[in-house]
Length: 130
Image 1 (cartoon, rainbow, N blue to C red):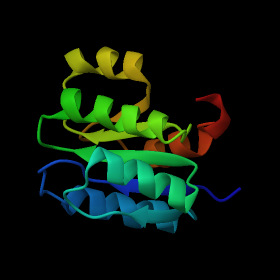
Image 2: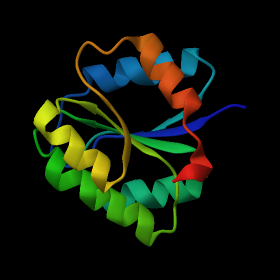
Image 3: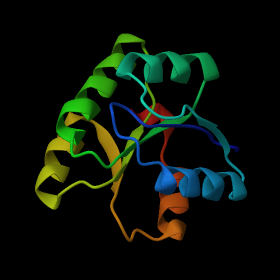
């Protein structure tokens, strides 16, 4: 099964080198990737996820605003009745990981996560289990 993945940068985080690498990696792995670009709102991410009928949503956050932005995106996805896994990549301190998982994040990828691990994790996520 080909995964349709939405990758988004929310808030004012303008660093996009890593997300561009991940986008190409996922495409090379056979996934369909929709990249929204920089400076998206939680609502625009949810709207795009619904419009594109994606299997999962990935957020790239390097701004330190993950504890604010991730719950807003989760709320927007729920409000849009878009029940897909949400994964987060970027700078997330270990001390914040449990909070994000409890909020509903399916996976967190920090700096140094192998590309093989990212692809295998995304392939293993069940869109119907969230």
